[in-house]
Length: 500
Image (cartoon, rainbow, N blue to C red; front, side, top):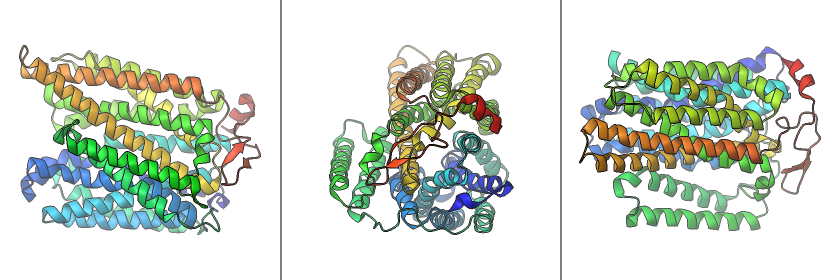
């Protein structure tokens, strides 16, 4: 098992794992800056260009649960290395692509590799750091990578595209992927899967993967096809029907892909609901604020990336130090609620940014509040989603929370962007095009603030107040290996802070 690593090697392993995760996170945003160059070079139309993004999102969102469970069954290290290999080879294919079909297919394979890496990396980190204080600090590093990687992607994408070509936004993954693979082989010992004696639930895997893929496809094409169109509604209905079938299978099969008892853990269930709402607000902030900077204030891509730098630095400071201390001092509930409410205030400030806005007065305050809130809250959300989960189900729990974040973000962004566009169209009759755009963005920011505030209130009311993952508690498991007692630590916070 990976927690047999001691001393500085664990922190080196954490850095390597987070580097692999950062590579995955970057690829969700780094492509956006280069899309015009890709379209001009390979002859994409406006309609076909969206598949450069959608092909990745489709396989990424559809395979998170499956990737997490495969890690439980066959070993998290083995799956992580396989995912990194697949992602790196697909990046090479993307960088060398000279046709639309090759690029889109390679992006789909990238999404599959990314799903596996994302689903099992959290499990590896949880098993590396079993002591509560160190786990909180390690999760702060992981949380920063997940929350701040998108901002880095915009800056790096603009830099590589401007200085070299769009091919390098993919080719840059090659040396990183090779280094991550080699270092993981050196640092992480080989280990069998935790779920000994179980077989893969093939029927459950097929139904839930198909359900998620249909849902992702419906969401990412919702604005283009129309949210009330027969295509969108039909796909969503089919996704829900497959999800219902999946739940029926899981309730009856001997070795379920997803033991339903996992959701009897209050922190796990609450954290995933909070994650959906929070991701919807976070994705909206990132993309809508980038649009505001570009289309309203006239920033160039590189300037947009630099504008996100303050939020990223504050997020890093809070995630890497302050968040862990807050979790150890107050438990999960207070940092999560306080962080999300601070982020909601930041979003509310963006909802009043004017057409002729000034960066220092109208953008920076919202960036600071959002960065602070995200840095404090994201660690607590991830820890809550994994708290009390048996090691044999840690990959699945990781896959579930990643799925919640991805689906919440995709659905929230699609819906809020659609509402913003509708508002802009309605206002064009009486206002200039720029003012109409800004009015639409205000609606999106305001709704995102409401979602973040709702997530903070739910977390504050429903999360158990104890320390994360019961240090020193003896877990009691049910027949499916799901922890049902001894979930919360009663360790005194003053004693716990001595670990720092």
